[in-house]
Length: 66
Image (cartoon, rainbow, N blue to C red; front, side):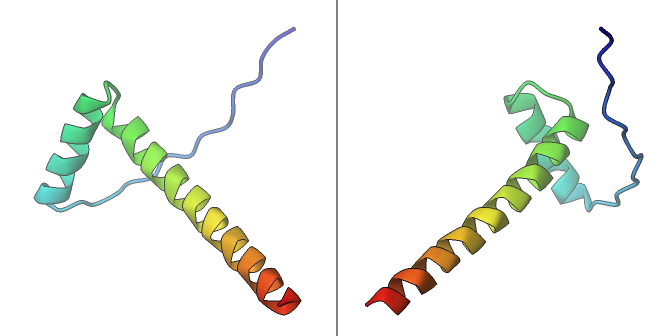
């Protein structure tokens, strides 16, 4: 059975030299490419947002029960 690869979209991103240096340094520390490092950062940001929203909803539910 063949595995279907996820479709990818090319996206051009402009960075300041300082931001480029930070991402490059982190990518090297994590033994990955800059592209993968940026993808990980974006994915983590969305996960954090989802987690923050979930926690906010739980707090609201707990406050209603008090």
